[in-house]
Amino acid sequence: KAGVTQTPRYLIKTRGQQVTLSCSPISGHRSVSWYQQTPGQGLQFLFEYFSETQRNKGNFPGRFSGRQFSNSRSEMNVSTLELGDSALYLCASSLNPGQGTNGYTFGSGTRLTVV
Amino acid sequence: AQSVTQPDIHITVSEGASLELRCNYSYGATPYLFWYVQSPGQGLQLLLKYFSGDTLVQGIKGFEAEFKRSQSSFNLRKPSVHWSDAAEYFCALYNNAGNMLTFGGGTRLMVKP
Image 1 (cartoon, helix red, strand yellow):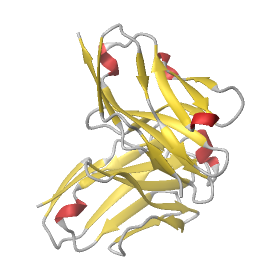
Image 2 (cartoon, rainbow over the protein chains, first blue to last red; image 1 turned 30 degrees about the vertical axis):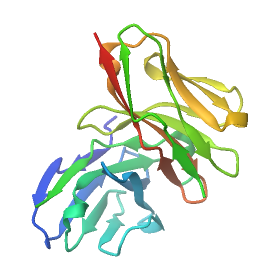
Image 3 (cartoon, rainbow over the protein chains, first blue to last red; image 1 turned 180 degrees about the horizontal axis):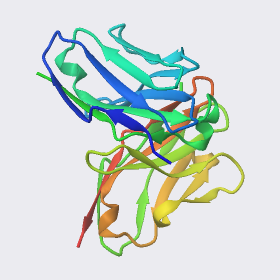
């Protein structure tokens, strides 16, 4: 059974640009969450999607957005990139919302560097 | 508000020695607690989880953790550390209302030969 797949693995962007990251959850998993990991702030929750709807969002500016498709694949987008957006972005999947009690399965992440 | 604290940022142990990584949490209800491990450049791998019941839970790779409600702690232990255990370890608390994890700051484990 394939795990959570995130693409691309590495990305370098310039300040002011926008970026789109992709996440394919484990087959059968319908809930996808995104986390940002930085040395200064650690791991922080970005948002969660289920049935193509954003259910929860963390404390991030509106430049951070996402969506989920009917096949449960999810994308997140960051517009007007800032240097502080440089981070490892992790995607996690679970069967359904509320199944987080079983523990999420994380992808390997996308390393975004903003220059 | 809920929070997770890992007091030790770095820990170095000798190979074959025992290990204990500390985790303290703050949460108003029964906690769902997890330990994850992250190798350099990789995602997070679930080591073990606690919901209720037995306060000593077993995980993968020979790890175990003990939940102590009176101390609001969920410490991770391993009797004998292997060089391959060198990684960063994260304690996490599940927020049922928000369906999200709150993570501690992590503890980086180094293993001396």
